[in-house]
Amino acid sequence: MGQDCINEKRMQDLVLSEQDRRRKRFQAHNNNTVWKKRAQPPADWNKPLPDWLENKYKDTYLYHKSKEMKLGEDNKSPQADRTLCVIS
Image 1 (tube, one colour):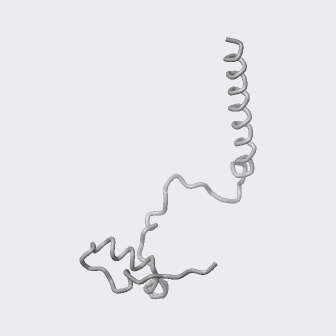
Image 2 (cartoon, helix red, strand yellow):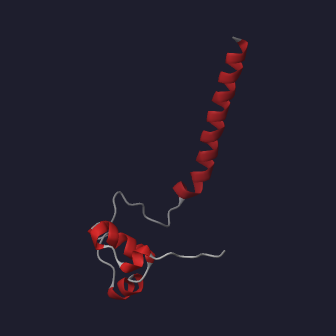
Image 3 (cartoon, one colour):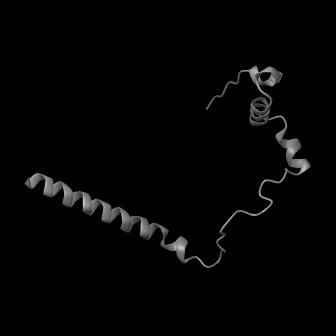
């Protein structure tokens, strides 16, 4: 029974220290008065991209994968099956 009390005490100490660590970590964020906090996202948060950005995005892997997911497997683009080699 003594071991259980020690483990419970250690657990409580750990929880308190984590709560304190988290409080200190977010202290600057919560005290920041420069930025106004929002309750909800802007009304136009999902508006279409500007044309120049859409054109820049058009030949990317993400664009082709997104299009493939929206249209389904039957309408795969030829770019979808290509293999990519990355050397890092």
